[in-house]
Image (cartoon, rainbow, N blue to C red; front, side):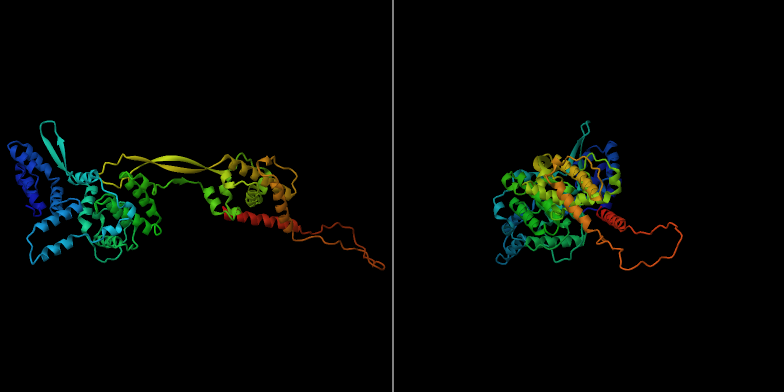
Length: 502
C-alpha cells in the first residue's frame, strides 16, 4: 500500500503486537518483520520491539517521504520514464491529452541557450551518475552480530535529503515572489521556510532565463550546489555553463562570488579531465604584506605612509638622547626623504619596488570541491595550485635602516648639532645626504619669522641732553626668545601630526 502511515498506529502495534513484528509490517520493513515473526516464541522479538519504540517516528517519516517522493531517480531519467508511459497511453480526443501532458513535462527553460560553445562538448561520465544513484539508494546498512543474526539499520542525513529535494524541486518553475533574506553558508531545502522557497524558485527561474535579479549570496550558493551535484540537471555542459554565467553576472555585486565559483568551476572541469579548460579558472594565490600594499596604494604620496609600517624594517637602532628630544622631527624628515630616495634610485635606473621585494613561487595542495559535493568519490582527489608570496629583501632592511640613521644626522645638522651618528652612506645612492640637507635646511630657514635687518645708529647732531642722576642698580632686561618659541611650536605641531598618522 502506498497510503501514508500513522505514527500513533505504529506505536500501538509495537506496544501490543511488537513481538510479532506487526508494526514493522505496517511501515514496510518486511525482512525485519519476518525475523520477528519466526522468533516470536523467544523473548528476543519482544525485547527488540520495545527498543523499536525509539525509532518508530523516524521510520514512519522515512516511509511517508518515500511514498511522496517515489520514484527517486535523476530528474532527466524521471522525465523520460514519464514520457514513455504517456506515449504508450491510449490517445484521447485525437491525441490532445498526450500532447498537453508532454508539454507539461518539458523543461521550463531552454537548456541550449544556457550552454556556452566552449563547453558544449562536455559529457557527464557514467561513474558520476552511478555515484549519485548509489547515494540515493543507500538507505540501509547491515550490521552483523556474530551470532548468525543480521540487522539492517535505515538511516538518512541532510546531504542525502538535499539530493532528494533537489531532484524533486528540479521541475519547480516558481511564481513571482518577493526577496527574502537568507544568510547561511550551507543551507538545504529543509531549512528554508515557505517564503524563502518561493523566492528561490522564482529567482532560479529568472536566472535560467538570463534575468539576474539581486539576491543574497546564500541563494546563489544553493543553486551552485545543485549544479555541481548534478541533481538539478545531469548535463555537465549545462552545469558548468550555468556556473560561468552566474559568476559573470554577480561577481561585481559580491566579491565572494568569484572566490567560490571560480574555484568550483575549476574543480568541476578537473573532475571531467578537462585540464586545458580548467587552466582558465586556476587562479594563482598571491600573498603580500602591508608595506607592499601601501607602497602601491600611496605611490604618488610616499611621505604619507605611517611610520609604524617602516619601524619593523629598522634593524639594530639604539635611541640616543638627541633622538628622544627630537623624535617627531626625525620621523618627519625620514618620511619626507622616501620620495627623495625613490628619485635617486630611478636616476640610476633602479626600481625601488623590485629592489625591496621579491616573488617566491611555490605550490599549495587542494582537494576538489572541499565539502560541497555529496556522495561522489572525490574527497581524497588532490591537486596543486601555484602560489606567489611577496617577501621583503635584505636590501629593504638595509636601505630603511640606513635612511633612518641618516634622517637623524640631517636633523642634527639642521638643529646645529655637531655630533653625528656613524652611517654607512654607501648603501644609499650617492649625493642623497646632500639633497636631504639642502631641502630640510631651506625649509628650516624659511620658517624663521623675524630677521635682523639693520642696526640703528645712536649718533645724533647737537649736544646731548643731560640725564638725571640715578643710583647704579642692576636691572634684568625682559627679552622674548622668538626663535625658541617658534621651535617649540613647530615641534608641537610635528608631534601632533605623528599621533594623527599613527
